[in-house]
Image (tube, rainbow, N blue to C red; front, side):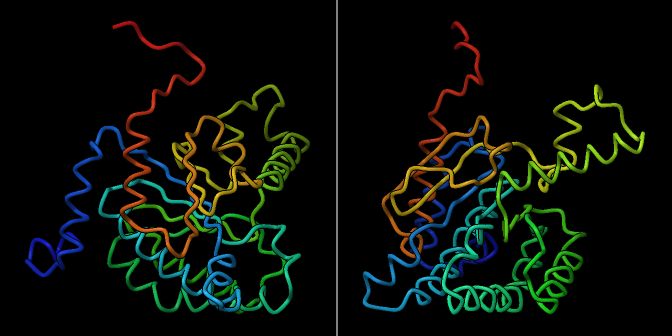
Length: 262
C-alpha cells in the first residue's frame, strides 16, 4: 500500500488507514501477532448463506489484515486456519476448506512474494492430500529467500500436539545420546517447536466473542496480551486491527515482575 500512497494512487480509505497507523508508535508495536479467525460460519448464517460462504469471505479479510501487518512492519503474523479438532466438522465443510486453502496459495503467492513475505506452516501434515502438501512445500520454498514478515499458517495444528511432538523429538535425541536431559532448557525446547526462530507471541486477537485460547500456541503465548472482539472474522477490518494494536501499546507488560519505579 505504501507504494501506492507515495505514487498518489491510494484511495481515500487507504489514506485514512495510513493516518491511523500513526496512533501506534513503532516502539510499542507487537513483534508477533497471533489471530484466532473465528466466526466465519456465524457470519454466513447471519447473512442467510451457507457456512462455506463465510470461509470464502474470511479469506478476503485475511488478505487485508496481512497487508496491514506488512505496512506496519509486524515481524510475525500467525493465523489459526485449521485445528487438529476441526477434522470433526462435516466432511463437505472440511473438503471446502482444503480446496479454499489450495486456491489461496495459487492466487496469493505472487502478492506475498511482492511484499517480501516468508511463509511457514505450523502443525501436522497427516490427513492432507499429497497434492496440497506439494503446493504448500512449493510455496514455502518460493518465499524462503524473502526478508520481510513471517506469515505462519497454523493448519492441522494443536498447541498440545505441538508440545508433545517437541517432547518426543527431544526424548529421541536424548535416547540417542545426542543431548543430555539436563541440557534441555527453554531455548532448546523452543528450537524444536513449529515456530522455532520466531519471537514469543505478544498479542493474541480472537474474533466473534469467544473468550478462550482453543489450543492455540500454548507455549508461545505464555505471556501474550489478549484482545477480544464480538466482530465475526469476515467483518473484521484493518481499522479494528489497529484499534487492537493501540490497546496493546497502552498495556503494561511486567512478565511476572513489578512496575519499574519512576
